[in-house]
Amino acid sequence: MTAQNPSICVFCGSRDGKNPTHAAAAEELGRTIADAGWRLVYGAGDVGLMGRVARSAQAAGGQTFGVIPVHLFDREVGKRDLTTFIVTENMHERKKVMFMNSDAIVVMPGGAGSLDEFFEVLTWRQLGLHEKPILLLNTDGFWTPLTGLIDHFIAEGFADASLRDYVRVTPSVEALMAALRAALS
Image (tube, rainbow, N blue to C red; front, side, top):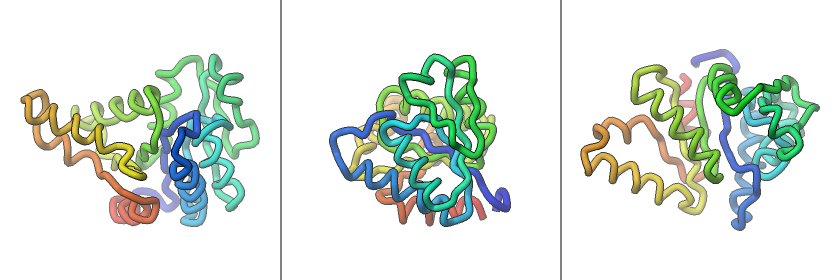
């Protein structure tokens, strides 16, 4: 494995969204990360999918590492009872601290913030700045339009076909965990 007890960065929504499948997947993911003996690295909020993944990891006895920028502390209800809790000055610093303290990146359903986080780590990978696995949890096909957009970038000549190889799309938490185990071994 990359590390004896890998740290998995989870980027996800600060809302639950309309589809209850996403909330259930967040709870399952937090629990399975903890059950594997891995540490959850996430945005330190106690709302939406973020809160669900963290609370379920904690309930399963997992280690949690949260990073939140000072300007979102109230809005995202900063979760202070984490194993490690860090407050940053801004969003850029938040993403950097989360990335630097993780061995793999998982992107669950979310909005513009989750897309920003995804594209930043994908761009860094494309530029050769890291080789960490990037996985999309595509519950109920949530990320299918995004993968189509990536294919469009490639078809239109704005990216090499290798861009698609940097992202693993998984339909379930079970498939995601199997992919993480393979990638981290």
